[in-house]
Length: 139
Image 1 (cartoon, rainbow, N blue to C red):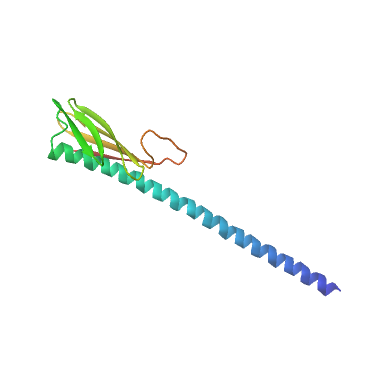
Image 2 (cartoon, rainbow, N blue to C red):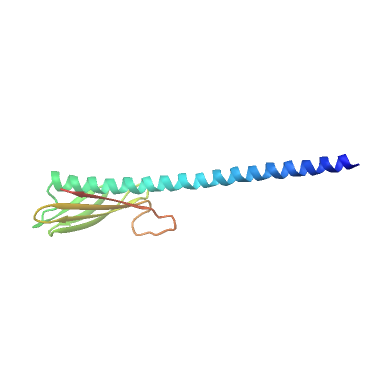
């Protein structure tokens, strides 16, 4: 009789150990899935910021659209904005993947500064998982 009780206790102990290990592995996997989702959202925000910088660079260097004396209409990623006419130009770009870039171009006597803040959601929206990445170019 005593041997049966020990076997049952050993079986319960092994089952509890296996359940604990399984729950630990599940917790690790669930955490890794959350991290990978955040990484994707962070990349979307970074690419949006980069696209904003590239748009401003093209229109400033190749087209001279950011003239401080006259304003011009620019078109990037299907977005039209009026820029120039002063030393500061600010515009937003909405992209087809629902990401956004807030672009600011400041001209001084000695340099031009482009600041682009990319977000993983469309311009004007807010959300609990909003990720923002920024780039700044000086020349």
